Each structure stands twice: as structure tokens, then as C-alpha cells.
Image (tube, rainbow, N blue to C red; front, side, top):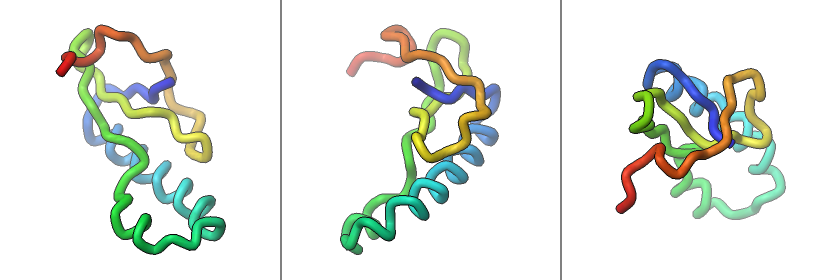
Length: 79
């Protein structure tokens, strides 16, 4: 599942909020400072090819109030 937004700014703001919530949830159980030094976001915000909306993977501990859609194979270029 992916969170879906009309603008990149909305997606980035929501992703950062989800990351901070997830980090607060996980950090006490993970005694691994090197991991937190390298981890800077929950997921990459990407623009879909199909409709130009911005998406990132749903965070289990993040806000579940955003529009969510099941991933589709035609959303992104295949590398």
C-alpha cells in the first residue's frame, strides 16, 4: 500500500511526520546507532507516471488518514 498525494510538498511533509513517529516507536528497541546515522526517511517520495501524483509506502506506525492505494506495476519506470 502507498500513501497518495496531489503535491510533492504534501507527500514530503507526511513522509517526514511518519518517519519521526516510526523512529520514536522503533528507536528504543534498536540499540544500533549506526543504523539511525544512515536512516533518514521512512520511504522515498516518488511521482507516479500514470497521473503525476506523489506516493510513498505506508508506514505501519504512521498516519493512516491519508489516501491509500495498492501498488500498481505501471506507476514507475522499470530500471
